[in-house]
Length: 174
Figure (tube, rainbow, N blue to C red):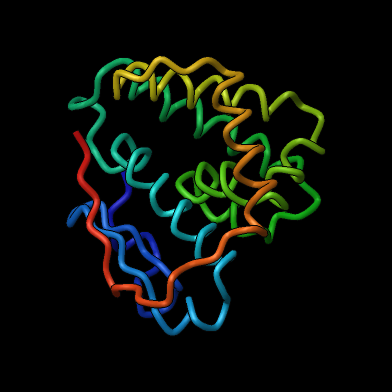
């Protein structure tokens, strides 16, 4: 079980998803420094956390079977990928939470996972599709998830952000 003490805080990162406060905090200074494309990738990375952190922060006794399966499957595939990668220092190998968000929002990390040739990418997509469909009343296919990710990652260079950003964005989950 993770707690917020297990992850870096907003004072050391460009953004931070607080599960306990249900809040994403963004570092305006880092957004300015890294630019629009990095901001978009970072924001979506944190948004994905808002959907996937729950099973890792809660006691398994409080989870439904879909949440338990998602957590255990991600833990297993994370260990396998970390064991076989030639790049264990990549941010996505920090822990299971970062693994999920990085594989879905970072093109370099996605390519690293695909390059392992262990069918990990397809398994991750299946776990995420099953989890989203089972817990958020979505009706996605594996192809929907993969297509959306590829379209987003391939178009991220075209993103431009208005400069009147607020310092905090609150997330509400159903």
